[in-house]
Amino acid sequence: MATRGSSADEPARVDAAHLVAVAADLLAEHGPSALTARRIADAAGTSTMAIYSRFGGTGALLAALRADGFAHLASLTDAAATEVDDPVTALAAASLAYLDFGVAQPHRYRFMFVEPAPGDEPGRTAFATLCSSIEKCLAAGRFRPDPGHADSDAADPPRIWAAQLWAITHGVTSLVLTGTVPAAAARHVLCDGLTRLFIGYGDDAERAARSVADA
Image (cartoon, rainbow, N blue to C red):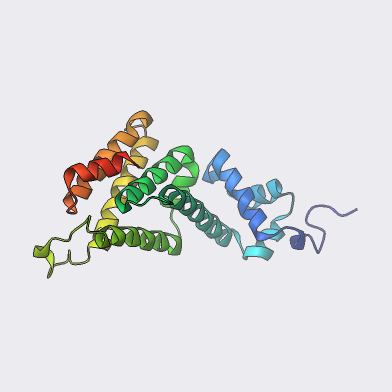
């Protein structure tokens, strides 16, 4: 009778997606300390050989887990902004979905944004999506670049504003996770900050406040 690790075709019975899903469950329940090859393999009902067969090592599996986290976050932010005609409301709704994700899944959030990661393709993709959302606000005439910055380092509003929006959303989320900001106050803090940023980007004050309130 075959024992764990003795079957030559064992890795073939465990696909990469299953290993990532198992790792995600371990992370959510126990935190990043649980993400060892042995614990993942045990939880998946296989041997560590399956991890090396599918990923070449634990590092690549953790990179796939991080990418999976970003894909899940993108599905939440996209869903929040779907069928919203107002691009500013859509931008605010995506930020609030990001906050909700981080508060609901603190271990996964910290793993994605705080733990060191080799390369950051998922992060760059998420940043490009945020830039695209800001470009929609510019195209709609809601945001307007400051003409006085045309020849300065601030001449690329989508990238600069995307960095600022991500910073405030990440900042509020992190403050909630450290207990500095009460979870009950988080959405108010973030919405107030977003409204002030949107006004700074050229939006009408009342319209910006209304758009954020609708998110």
